[in-house]
Amino acid sequence: MFLNIFFNEIKYWFNRPAFYIYTIIFFLLSVFISAAAAGIFDFITLTTGSSKIVNSPFGIAGLFAAPASLLIFFYPSIIGSTISRDYESEIHTILYSYPFSKINYLSAKFLSGFFIVNLIILIIFLGTPLGLILPGTNQEIVNPFDLKSYLDAYYIVILPNLFLYSSIIFGVATFTRNVYVGFISVIIIVIIEALLEGLFSNPDNRFIAALLDPSGLSASNYYTRYWTVSEQNELYLPLGELLIYNRLIFISFGSLVL
Image (spheres, rainbow, N blue to C red):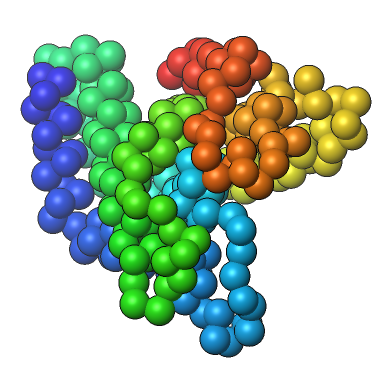
């Protein structure tokens, strides 16, 4: 029954114009961000160049993560709506008469929304390197495509954050049966992150920030804060002890919410 619910949700989204609108928006956004970083607008800003490689492993973490981070504002309409839609249409009264378990129903709903969000992230994955090679970009600050840089950004930064935020939003939408409360929870998450960033801005709090920053950026910055330009251009994102602990803490929290 799990697969029936899961594939029915996927089919629903593939038939929705909103899915294709989201993919187009984030594809163009990722292309624009990476092309701008590669100097396509230098003729406007009159900048000359940079010693930093824009698609270094360090740079990709920012280029790839930026549009993916904006995607959180769409989580409620994707992940939250998988569950709230049944209540709004009152079809849950029919669904609950079918012989499937609670775990089958909820896990299929959550994972289908999670899958759709990952498809949009895949579009961002494709748009980012494309923007770097557009005519007019400065190829002197662009290295050849390096798959590992993108995979590191996805597995270290994007995927754990996606799981955490998705779990919270899905949980809120499930308990309240209202997708709009999911949007409110997104705003609250953003505010809390901003407050934590201010609270941990003191250099003396760097260790605590590395552990308790939900985004994982403080944990990453803990190791890269004093990197030279040369190191930023060449080294991959460090999977340090504090970063691993940070990711485990918030993956565990997301699992607890589910």
